[in-house]
Length: 111
Image (tube, rainbow, N blue to C red):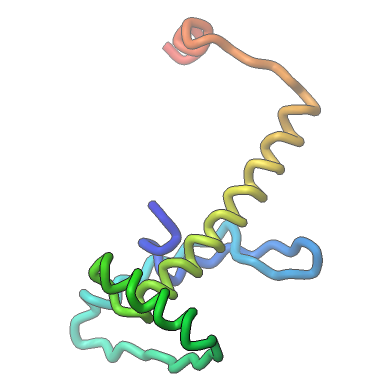
């Protein structure tokens, strides 16, 4: 599941003084929260006219509003950072004990 599909996921870890999200997942589907008021926040940013036109046109071609596109793009960047962090942790763990198993060995162990 992509970060943009699990809007509201929380993963907290700190790297280079930047707090990101890790290890605790909350899934929120705001489209099906019947009877529950959906809270939204307005976010304002300054971009030049050419950037706005490019982003707006790209979003329109892909059937999204500019806001939807910006949210998806931002969550994709966060997901990439989380994935890279998780890979670095797994790689460091593997480097400490570089043992691998073939598919046959795994089948023998767990069969």
